[in-house]
Every structure is written in C-alpha cells, then in structure tokens.
Amino acid sequence: MKEKVVIVTGAGSGIGKVVAKQFGVSGAKVVCTDIKGAEETATEINNEGGNAIGLYLDVSSLDDWKSVKDKAIQEFGEINALANIAGISEAVDIVDLEEDDFDKMININLKGTFFGMKVVLPEFLRTGAGKIVNIASLAAHVGLTGLPSYSASKGGVIAMSRQVAVEYAPKNIQVNVVSPGIIETPILANNPPEVTQAFTDATPAGRLGKPEEIANMVVYLASEEANFVTGQVIKVDGGWGSK
Image (cartoon, rainbow, N blue to C red; front, side):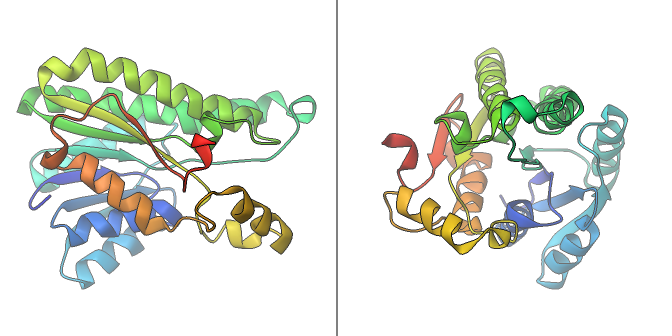
C-alpha cells in the first residue's frame, strides 16, 4: 500500500481506527474520517511515522462525502482505495423496532456505503484502477437474536457490493466485502460477562476475534496483491458462519 491513498470511514474508534492505523503502517496515505475522533487517529498515525489527515464525515450525508473526496484529492492528488468501516448496531425485537430507528440503521450502514462508492468510483475510472472494501457482518449470514434492521442493512451491503463488483470488474476496479464475527471492541466490553461468554462458546475457534484480524484482511483486499479478487464476501468469524 506504499504511497496509495485510502479513505477509511469510522476511523475514530473501534475496528475503523485499527484499520486506519494498519493502512498507515503499510505505507498508505490515510484519509481518516468519522463524526468524531478522526483527527486524533490521524495524529497517532503521523506520530508513528505515517501520513494521514483527519476529516469530519457523516456517512449518511452525500454532501459530506463530496467534501471528503475533494479534500482528499486536494491533499494527496488522487484516491486509490476506500474502506467503508463506519456503522452502527442496535439490539431490539422487530415488533419494538421504531421506523425512525430502522431508517437510521439503513441510512448509516447501507446508504453510507452506497454514497461512498458513488463518490469514489468516478475518481477510480479517471485513474484507471481502484479498490473498495465494504464491511458487512456475521449477522448478514446467520440469524442473530434482536438484530432485524442491522441484519437487513448488512445483507444489503453484500448484495450491492456484488452487483458493483461485477459491473466494474472490466474497468480494473475491485469490490469486496469483509464479514466480521464477534470482535473484541470497546462496545463489546459493555456487555455482561455471560453474553461475552455465550459469543465465545458459539465461535468454533473458541475465542473472539481481534480488530487487527479484520484490519489485516481489509488491507490485503485493498492492496495490489488482491487484483484478481473481486465480488467476494470473506467471513472473518472464527468459523461461526460455517456451522
């Protein structure tokens, strides 16, 4: 990824932050974006010898996306890859799910991914190449209790990514999806211990995943080593989705 320019959404915390920092270690010029924390992540990357900028981005705003694209090109000259990591989750039974909450989930997780691809694809066509890595979830593959809107949004990410991958493959643009299982993040730490243990027990590998393990796959798919990989949905879930 040396000297490649990559936009990372959700870079302010959690998996997105780890992904952004892994891109920095790999030599990429990283455009860290989030509604908060992006500048701090960029500072950490720069302090570790990398090259990054931090920008505000509400992924559900097309205007924000256009601004990020323009600033990335102004700063680094082009865009070579996009990692759509930003997302939200909420556990609620479908009969208790409010319409506004459903719409918010779709707007951030699915429409945010759509906007990202819509904005960067013309730039990839201009330069003749590009990589997009979108994040889905184990919940898009198996039924998990209390996640109707989240599962719908991530299932949509998979379907949309496959369509775009097929359409843009002849144009030297690769689009792939990473579906994480249960990953050790600060949000997971808020769960009761018995919930975390249940997740661990349900994972054939016998442990939860680490953010770095997601980041490694994202960086690989965004690199030239994955030039013949497109339209794929890769589960990084310790085997849960294969049961």
